[in-house]
Image 1 (cartoon, rainbow, N blue to C red):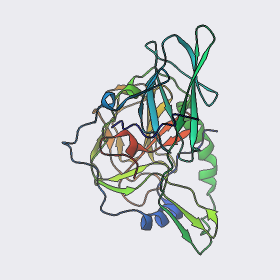
Image 2 (image 1 turned 135 degrees about the vertical axis):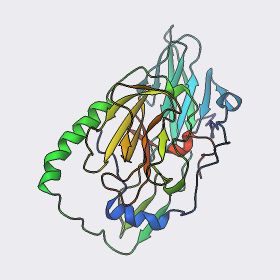
Image 3 (image 1 turned 90 degrees about the vertical axis):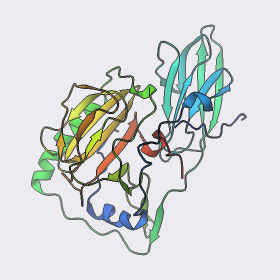
Length: 308
């Protein structure tokens, strides 16, 4: 899973995007209808074989927009930062960092050693060829939100934001992720339409369509930080899993959830059944991953993913 991309040897939390509505329907024309996840026999690649040592850092991951990085800091490190943002360190010196869909071309890891010296590792963040279509029409106006939506939505967003702020100490971030379910990929992370120069919202997750009622599983160990007791207006039966170190998964539109908030889940454990609750145009699993406030591409976390 962990192919290390190019290294430069020199030199508010908000709503979960959903799959229904005008933008989602427009995106359908951008997405390959026959794309599917690798077969079950495709196991996770091993990151250790693709690690690289740079200025005392041991690094492995996907250094690209929407990608991630796991590593070990130089010996004697007492603090770590990515572009000035402090990063958490595990007791053994391991850490996690990630790069938003719209990340710039470079980033810098800086370790502060016990004697006060600083060691830096400059990173080159590869751009992605997102599925973007420019159309010569304006955005289609959506229906005005109902009074019921206006009443419920702030409460839902508060639950989502509270869940994302939780730190459970989960260790799933150290694992090679697996596919939560196998099926046709009906929506790709990052796809977007531009309406006469005005960008529409990009797709913030990966849509997998195996059919309604199919079980989906935990891609990595974690703790359930949100399990909707009733369908949310947009996300439907929403499930959120904390994998630790600020990394979390969200699963939208489930027909049924089989775990509850506070449950400790293990990689491969069944979490729920694929459905189309909330704003969805057909049964599918919308899987999104965030690290802190950065949206990431689930394809870059699983075997056979990789930047396309």
